Each structure stands twice: as structure tokens, then as C-alpha cells.
Image (cartoon, rainbow, N blue to C red; front, side, top):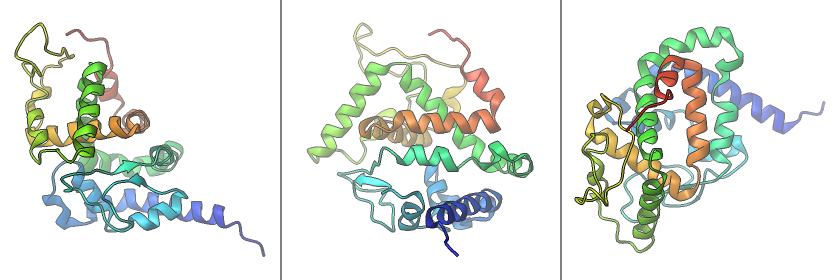
Length: 239
């Protein structure tokens, strides 16, 4: 009997994604010491290697960078992982099975609310502020990429963004030259260490060109599990 290997592979991966959602709170309990999205990466690596994930998706995860087929190198001082442009597209295709499965949605909603909601919201909040000034966002991505390529990236470079969500954050002491952003009251309560990590993530995604697809996937997640938050964050605001 002929078996379509592609369909078989996709079915196995969809089953793995569903079981991962259900088991997520129990995965990698030692990972709870990690902060921000590093906790998520840590948990996922307990059930699937980068090599196996690449095989399931049928594409390499990264086009270049310090990561291996088996391990994410998150502390490289002079390089970062440049995602394959199709990677976030593939993630959007597979990672929200509850969109078409009401029973699974019912099971996974409390898991989202307990284990994923905070970091998903923080990802979006930081992205929104960066995206409220596209010129600044692009400039910072280009600067980061240049420093990496020239091996001049200071290990504490992202510390300059610790206060990024505060209304007084500025990239220039001259008010006439400083960048302007949309500020939302209360955003500054997010842990400063988390903020700088997320700014770094989005700057790197802008640098490797995958920021749009990643944020579209994040929006899919929020619209499904956190629609009120998403709606409140996307109403018209003023500076």
C-alpha cells in the first residue's frame, strides 16, 4: 500500500503540536528559571530538536548564525540566528490547531492564560512601540546587523533598551533630534530585563527580514486566545 510520506510527516507533526499544547505546563520544569521567551525555547527543546523540527517543516530553520542542528546558541557575542524566511510562515500553518478544533480550544485556553499569555502580550507590546516609529526600528536593526558583521557588538548593547517602554525613553538628549513613539500607560510595568530581551528579538527579526511574518503569527495567537487584549491594543491612540 502506497503511503504519501509528506502527508504522513504532516500528520505526525500536527499530532505533536496538539500534544505539546496540552502538555506544555508540564514540559521542562527546570526551564521555569529562564526569563522571557528563553523559557519557551527551553521547554520546546525538551520534546523536539531543531533537526527534527526542520525535517517536519521541510526547510532549514536558520539560513545562518551560531545555532547548530541540535542546539540554540543564545549567548553568541558576535552572531545571531537568521531565520529562514519560510520558517515563520510554516509556524503559522501548524501552530494553532485550536483554530479549527473547538474541543482543543476549550482545553488549551486555560493553558494559554496560565503559561503563555503574559509573554505573548509582552512580545506584542514591545513590537507595537518599535513599530510606532518605523524609521527608528529600521535604523536600530541596521545598526545591530552592522555591529554583528563587524564583530563589534558589545555584550551589554541591549541594556540601552531597559527603559524602552517608559514614556521618557529617548535615543537623543536633544528633544528636536530624539525619536518619537506611541506610549501606552502601564506598559512600563513590564520587567526591564524582559523588555530588553524582546527588543533584541524584534531588532534581530527586522534585521533578518522575518519580523512581519512573526508578528502576523503573534496576531493570530492573540486573536484566537486573547481577542479583548488585541482589540484594546489596536484601537487608535495618540502620542
